[in-house]
Length: 263
Image (cartoon, rainbow, N blue to C red; front, side, top):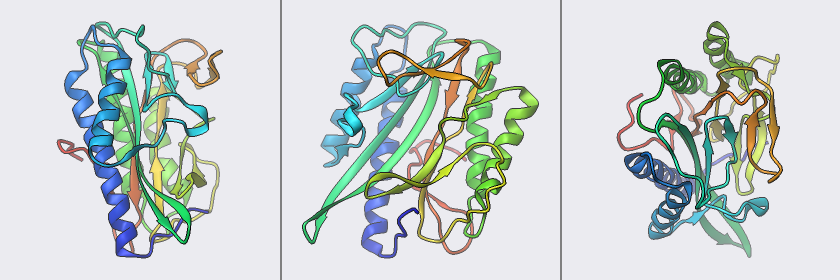
């Protein structure tokens, strides 16, 4: 089960990590344009994180080689940045980033992590794909509004599913949100559709909610690089994510909120 944050120091470390992760996406969004490579985005992300005194969460995690997961068009998640991946007009790109502050306690390394994602248009995109992005982002906000202490995982998943279904989006089922703790991914696994789960959120939990909607089928597969997840029908996908701190009363604290983000 997810770590329960109980001290002001730990809360402040999670807040600091979330602030850095949000800053990365804020800065990367400014330079998204046709002609830029995903490698350039990755380099800037790592510079921002290290300049803030943090560590790129993903770099080296289970062997992942980069700072950012940069997933273009039909790539759902875990896309590997490349010098050869040049963005072009009409693309969409999902950027998923983590920032870590590492502290030692009694000889143990404790990681405090902010994990967040956004999907952005490259130049002008079709109205249909823009709606996919808008709806996926709105589903994240709907899930956040439901993420109060005592709520079940189904009460988070329901509002997300209720945006996907009327629009006939494929809801990615193999991947979803998660608890965040010293080891990064922790229970609970937070799906984006109803399963009947009665698992309840507790004050002090840090979780990530991350809906992934496809313009076509919900079916996905992993490419030969053993990382990049793509839609089986090669239709576009969108992915949004925030890290949250569940509090005693009311709406959760959004740890990774971007400086210009209006919710």
